[in-house]
Length: 309
Length: 280
Image (tube, rainbow over all chains, first blue to last red; front, side):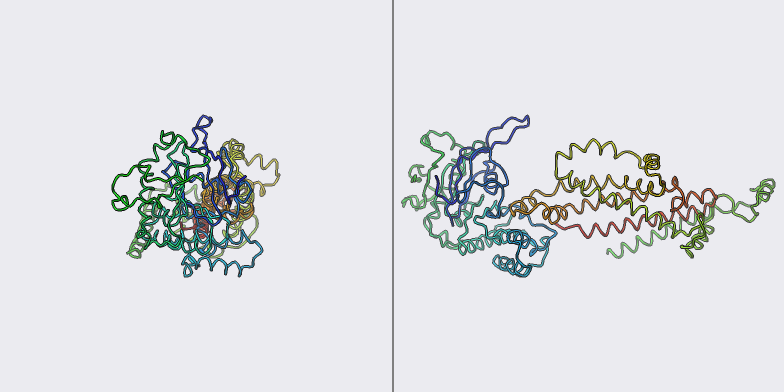
């Protein structure tokens, strides 16, 4: 039916209430797809079920309804095909940095010799700039370095897809910027397919090919899918010189601040079809007036250019 | 600063000990003159106790002489009722070691099972709750009847008393391994055995070691009482035997030894605990 690399169809999650009845679904009727080599970010307020969606993609949690299909196969349970970077790095403190990555590599290739595993791990740790720290214990590392080890661990098993659960959420802005650059470099080099949760609009614009906007939970939906139409060779330093940048940024912030609350069932969205959420390209909207005066209030219809496929 | 502190603490300890010995010495000074009546002295002489023999609570000097006497030859063996303190302590340690080892072999796997399975937690909980508060010595008659051997019964008592802290701590440690680490193992498709040994065991090790340390402390307390009942050998039997001999200096000596060995055991487990503790 679908020929997407990964497709999410009708996903729904409801947690049982205390008396055992099914509660109001956190989200339902979630449809979206990810192509091979695509970098997809998902943005939404707390409680809209982003992490749950990621856990379902990872196979760590079961959805109440709907399916996830990857490569023509239903996702059932966790697998080495999907690497996960956890929000809280999740390094095992009794293993060294190398040991943590080697544990993952050994899981993927149990027949490899010790030397081969060590060489492979070192390569990936050097990739995230930790070549000097491979024999340290995680407790000796800063938060940013720990998170990098987590990223190296996920990349080292060469998964078909990478799932990142707000990996930079706990880091200070400076460290976050450096690691974003590193991630960008690695992803551009490896053409890795990535699904990432973030709260940071700039991070999403920097990294993503498309951004999935979730309306507020409960009963959260995919409100819009925003194509980031800026050229792929973005850098953190040069990104804001692109005229598209502010248009996209305004659109995303506008959504988070104003529209995410009211999205479900608004009259404006009468034709909303959850199977094909509106795809918008705010970067390409030719609003020279708006670009000149970005603070001016613009009507929604002008800002948005719906291009349903 | 800290060396200064520990030096002052050590100095204070020595002072307190000296005070203690001093007060003890003053309290047990032989009373002048008429404290011992003529009749009593005569009675004592009749009973074969020379006038020079210490009366009442032993003085620190007498106990000190006992220490020197016993420690100068700790491993002599003059038959069933006269063995050196080293041999007695070795017997006790052997029993504690055997019982403790057996308890570990049962408690660790069982604790793993309980910790991993909410079903087993609930199913076994009533048994554990009932068995746990039973004084280990209450098992003694049953053990003697079933096992028909006093030595083995002693080991059994140690086994049963070491069991509970280890079992509960293992179950707790295993059940509260951080969700993230389990999820890492799951996404890496780690097999159950590898997960148990490489993830859960190291994660729970500090908690498990705490349980073992508590168990060892209890076992060392219980072995003295058990050996008083079972008799034959061991430091508990030694204490009881010396009480029957009314040799209080020997009793005080044995008590001190029990304390010191217990401290060393606890220290050893403290070192083990430090080895498996991870900094997060």
